[in-house]
Length: 126
Image 1 (cartoon, rainbow, N blue to C red):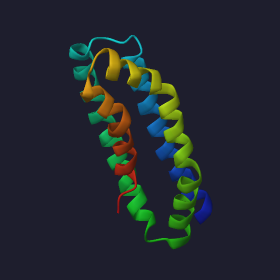
Image 2 (image 1 turned 135 degrees about the vertical axis):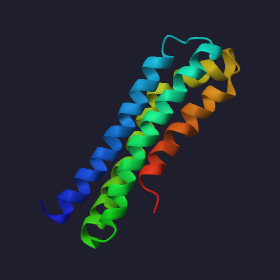
Image 3 (image 1 turned 90 degrees about the vertical axis):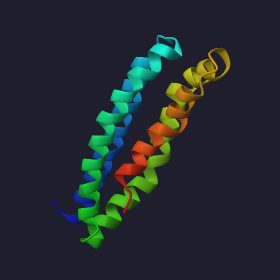
């Protein structure tokens, strides 16, 4: 596998893992359970995906030693990260509205708006 392909494969794995976290969050929150039930369900999701993103971060850091591959991963993420975050916002927007205005649950709103993106950030910190 050439450098470009290795970089793009890692970027795709990072965003695929992020998409999976978003999908799992949607499954947990879509029946709109009360915040007292929903918040404890989200903690294991954060822990599980935090570990996955930390493992991906090790691969990302290893690519930093190979400038062409590292450039490829960053180019691919630059072209596609925004689309993944937009997908998250599109899928979970109605749930954010519900938990912000109907349930007044800042913990869940913060999780959806920032917590999931922090998982993505964890995979690409240097």
